[in-house]
Amino acid sequence: MKKLYVQIYCVLVAFTIGIVGCTSSTKKEKDMEGMESDAMELAAKIRIGWNLGNSLEVPLNDGGETGWGNPVTTKALIDLVKASGFNAVRIPCAWDGYADSTKVISPEWLARVQEVVDYCMANDMYAILNIHWDGGWLENNSTIDKLEEVNELQCDYWMQIANHFKNYDERLLFAGCNEPNIDRYHGDEIARIGMAILKTYEQSFINVVRATGGRNKYRNLIVQGPHADIECTEKYYGLMPKDIVPNRLIMEVHCYTPWNFCGMKQDESWGKSYYFWGKAFHKEGSDRNSQWGEEEDILRLFDKMKTMFVDKGVPVILGEYGVMRRQELEEDKEHYMQHLQSRAYYIEFVTREAKNYGMVPFYWDNGYLDFGIFDRKQNTVSDTLVLKALMLGSEQGNYPF
Image (tube, rainbow, N blue to C red):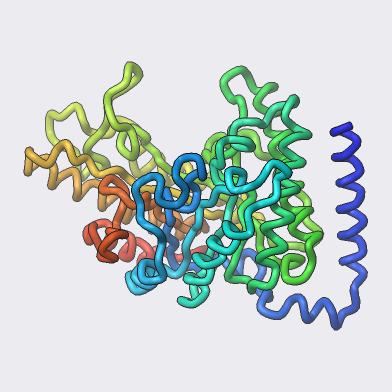
């Protein structure tokens, strides 16, 4: 029965899109008002983006927006983000935990998300609204046995989200998911099956948004590579999904390379955590210097995305990147300062080179002392060194489009 439902649904969506494609030129022009930029044109307008991390993506059963320690997001915070030099905000968001047993999203939750989107619009900023981890219903289920169930949910949620926000202009972008997993550990054949299943989820997202009509017929939409990992995306993604509107799709990947430096909190059996990155910032004789993933590796990764997508007319969102601050080094002032300088250099380098390779940078800020650059409770800048590195990298980088 579920399979039949999905087949019927896809036929209906295709039929609806066909009708949309036959609308009069007058109607088409009206729907395009405020939606004139294609993907490349819009990407070029984003100087640098910032993530409102660990806030609206907190599941309701974990306490909702403030459940992971951050305060309620205010317009004053978004005002500060804009004043600090960012002109775009990525809004990671949960939906499943805010839906009832029939998968209807709470009107109160839609209204709350809209408030935050409106904070961005009031500052003339771009905003990306996604379905984030959201309990893992999509992220962890690129499998045959979950294919129909996940496609149904993807259709249910995006129909509601897209309809609610359909009148917003091109400054609002939708992203179908976040870091969708595939099984890449049991051979290429299994990984490619997972990738094919993931693409059905992304195709459902695109089809549903387009079928809601209005400005959503022309909205720029973002799809994610598997795990949002650059190498995995290059190996398994292949062609972009289909879209009835040309040149309105954007790829998204993330970069926490090398993980030992960017996010590894403690030594593991497979390797040590790194404190220093960049050959000019190595500490002589230290076993905490990065052993991989330095400048040449970052450029190699970014070139993969440029070759695979940007050179073919598809811009790339670098939806997350950053380096945790090693607070455990604070008592060793010399090592701590060298770590902070190395960290700032990494962030400046990645920001600059992302833009040079056609990738739009969105820094990951979770609101805490490890990745955060804003004190959300006081509405102040808490990490001026990283903020300066971000702005310097953004100013130095130039998109190849």
